[in-house]
Length: 110
Image (cartoon, rainbow, N blue to C red; front, side, top):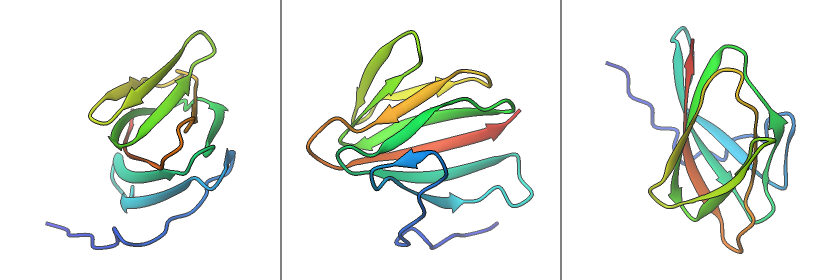
């Protein structure tokens, strides 16, 4: 068993992310094939269009809303909704609302 108690840490802005978005590794990869992150996006915060070759990602919106663009469609998820991006699926995120967005991001290495 391993317990992490870093949930109050601020996190970092990853490369190719903008607008004050911060990501905190709650459960880091550290020799595992998965990680769990908390992603906090203030209004206007997000991540540029990208994809992961070897990772699947689930975004679960815990608070607020988050808009996703895939190059073919745009959709907004609100509290309690989720999306799965398989390896190779392009995605762009932005918080278009007037309130902060909080998401859990589950990343699984394929």
